[in-house]
Length: 102
Ligand SMILES: [Zn+2]
Image (cartoon, rainbow, N blue to C red; front, side, top):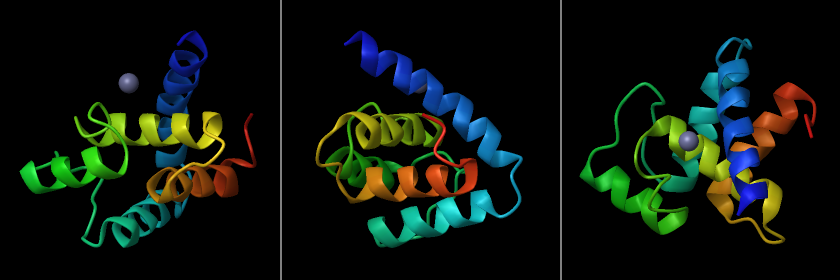
C-alpha cells in the first residue's frame, strides 16, 4: 500500500525529531514499556522475547528493530480506524511532542 509506505517513512523522520526533543525519548520508552509489560529501550536491539512481543502487539516487520517498531506503530496509529495499544502509545507521544504533524 503506497499510503502506508509514505506514512512509514514519515514515521522514521518523526523518530529522528523525537530524539532531539527534550523528554520525548524517555516518554516514548516509558509508554511502550508499560504496554509491553517490560522495559523498552530504543537504543537496544530486540532480543527474542521482545521480538515475539512486538510481533504479537504490532507486526513482524516492526519486531525487526526499534526504529522499525516506531515507524510501524506510527503507521498503524495513522491509518487504522482502531489502532492497538502499542500504536496508540507511540502515536500519542509523537502527537504530544511534535504537535500533530499530519
Ligand atoms: Zn522502515
